[in-house]
Image (tube, rainbow, N blue to C red; front, top):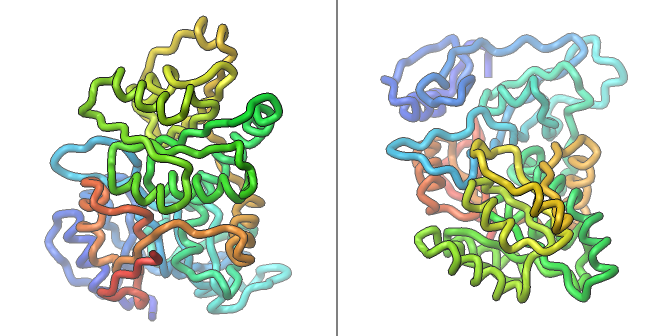
Length: 369
């Protein structure tokens, strides 16, 4: 692709997403999404200059990033920009020291504050090449694209829960872990619990709760101990009793990816003494918590930390060495983005949705299950 060349199909799809008329141009870079609102997202950018000591990455696949569990009316607004990207080295700076890259190398990008704003641009300049990780040939690009976002977040959650689980295993016959949310993060958590806590830990049981029956059935197929239907139309006390019954007495660790007021209050009512709740940073709700009750029961609520570069590399190696199973995902051409986000909003998709970009794009949908 030359500097002035444009992927018209991709641009038209994004114009349709924004509800704007399709405008032909020959001097802009396609797929630049620079705002959290689709209507402001489509922007015209030139092909970026290559940093003298950096690289330019051409994005081939990107995760359809959105906030799980959020209710939206009329129009779904995805969480732009994306931070799940995988692609190839497009250009290399002339002054890059100790260069270990060649044009065409498959890479992923560790997300940071500077680069998460570029996840849906087709070309991304990277000045700090320590954030650019080469992908083993055994790992498909579409799988690698999931790792810097959802997989790394789930890794950080399970890794934070692991010390508490191991402490309770020494004094309890069984430790119950509840994952709230059966979307992509929940599926990764089920797989990572087996990888990080151990496949042979029969006294650690992972439950998954969600409002969607289809997502719960998918979680069950991924190997969780049991599923719990949190039907939001049911009476709250009935949901709590159902959860306690399924877990046979309560929950020791809760990883909450929904972060609503209802899910937090519900979690507190099923949490055992000395229990731990881990919450993601996607929540915008406010909730009331009794500090006296929390202290009396020696319970804790902590935030899920951001995953680090070493954890991302470990994830990549674990998949390359077949030590970690990849949860369900589907690949769509970026031209179908509008329909994909609508399906995500309406719970019509399970697993992770991945977009193909540029010359990778096609009308074929790939399902790894």
